[in-house]
Amino acid sequence: MGAIISALRLALLLCVLAGLSACSAVRLSYNNAPELTYWWLDGFVDFDKAQAQRVRADLAALARWHRKEELPLVADLLRTAQTLAAQPQVSGEQICNLYERSTARMEALVQRALPGAAAVATTLQPGQLKSMAAAYDKKNAKWRDEWLSADSDGVAKRTIKIRERLEDFYGPLSAVQVRQLQVRMDRAAQDEPLHYREIVRRQQLLLQTLTQLRHADAGTAQSALTTVAQGYLYSPDATYRASREASLTQTCEAMAELHRSTTPTQRTAMVAALQGYARDVQSLISATP
Image (cartoon, rainbow, N blue to C red; front, side, top):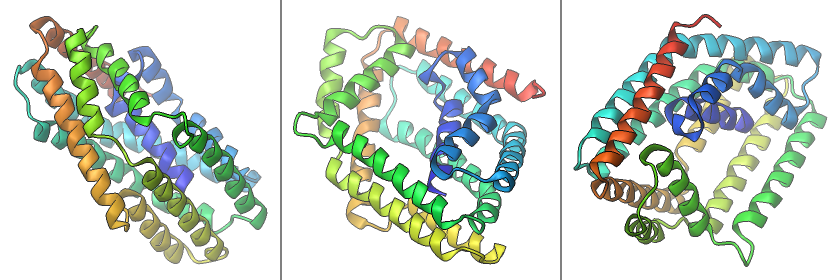
């Protein structure tokens, strides 16, 4: 389930945060999402033949549903983003509201995927759960090396990534804007050890739940995985929730402050980029896969 949620989150972000790559790449990724997601999941679980057939069919059905029901809502998000981008003055609250709307779309996607995930979960064998645990261990080791090592600077890395994404939309940022972004992102710094603790908590909860669901009935499995999914979206760790909320608020404020400093040319570039992605999403809605 954790792997499924992560894969679905990635698929949704390809639509909502289309600035991660060129329009053509977004269309290609979206149209091939069922197959790409299957291979991503199989890397964790190593499905047997029957499971593979079920997962492929469920992912294909999920993609059809998403194209019909969710992409129009993604198009609405992009229209709202265009309206905000054209304005010289925006607030952190407006940015966060847009983010919350995108999160709601992710939740809808996860909820739609739960019945299929539950059906497969009850068939997982001990060896497959060991495969998942080993994949998590490998992923965690890489994460620790990247974000928790003595020479790692998480704030600097995230700032660089955000700057690159922003310049995809606005064009080159000025030296003043770059310094402004750095100051704001310093305030929004994420507690990396706390975040890692949350990652491990989620993984362990999922593995424990899947172990308990072997041969369970569909209703029990779906209920249990719904609880796990809610724990991914809304952590029971109050300290983590407070830290994440503070970081998110500061990040929204950083984006709003940067936008308020943009030139008319930069805002025009942002609107044009969003219009391009909106057209791309519309073409995906209209296309027959």
